[in-house]
Image (cartoon, rainbow, N blue to C red; front, side):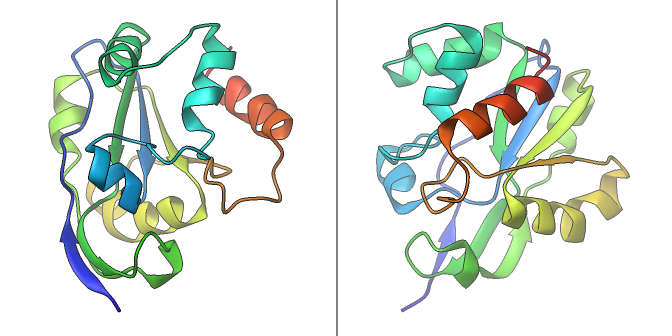
Length: 161
């Protein structure tokens, strides 16, 4: 069964943000926890910890880390119809307006976290902004083809680490 869902929490960014990382839409667990990449098997936060040599436990620590590291975090989709957390079920997309971040920070690079985020970025946001994005492999546990070490290599290079 598909439900229409609105993105339940704001982007994380400030005027010092230089890299904007965009996912597709929060998972069920992220929507429940009201925070990005909250599913315990999603590898986003473990990757950030390894790449930046930090330990991140709480939402507050993760937010402070992003803001102090020049990273902004949001999703391509403002609202959509989907079944649970399945990117493949996403329909009726209304994109987020990322211009608030692009106008308020000197974003040097936009990264899409996974194929679906990239596909949606190219369909809905690229025509508006004219800003290309770098597609990185998804940190989702559904992306079992990519080991943590392979993700680390690609993500650390893209983040300039």
